[in-house]
Amino acid sequence: MIHSFLLIGQSNMAGRGYLHEAVEVDNSHIKVLRNGRWVKMFRPINPDRSFSGVSLGERFAERYAQKYDVDVGLICCADGGTKIGQWQPGEILLDHAIYQAQLASRTSTIAGVLWHQGESDCSDPLLRANYEQGFLRIMDELKNKLDLHDVPFLIGGLGDYLVDYAGADCRGYREINETLERIAQNNPLTGFVTAEGLTPNPDNLHFSAQSLYEFGNRYFEVFEQVRNSKKVFHEKDTKNAAIQSGMELL
Image (tube, rainbow, N blue to C red; front, side, top):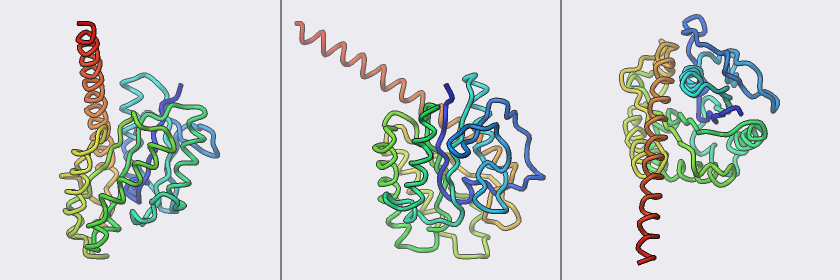
């Protein structure tokens, strides 16, 4: 059975790393969803724009396939330049992602959700203030519509290089990152993936191909941490249930 992952958010999840700078990955066990069917991975995996490029999902999938010796499917639904408000329940982007995931679930097991978004919300104090509430609505909708109550949600941080982005005032990225970290701390099976030290393309908006390769590594490592914490909690719950059962017999 294919283990699949839903990739959602804006351009840095879609991937804007330059293709000529791409680090090669072994795609023999990586598939992407096209027209409801799985096809062998090719670049760009998330062609939301004509200039789409390398994605962090490629290296994440390679690491997962290498460790678990399974085929990995990527459900790529990110869309560049989008605000979190465009991903709310009932909006087209989230409805589309849910529909694609439902198609994928016919022939795969959805093993996690990878999110990266926030650059478009950096410059507006009101958007930053409402970000956590907006993300939690998205997460709840995905869990309920796709029955993903038992899989990791990974949320990636924004790059420090945004202070040098000339297109808008993105200094509010720090507040977005603090919000993302708080979400991860306060919600089970949710992990924050730091972007500290990662470098951009010359536009100071999008991660470089090399950084996306490293970001994919980090997403996988946090996935493993979240997955292992789930196992620990499950064993703890099982032990507590056994203890409680024993007490009831006394």
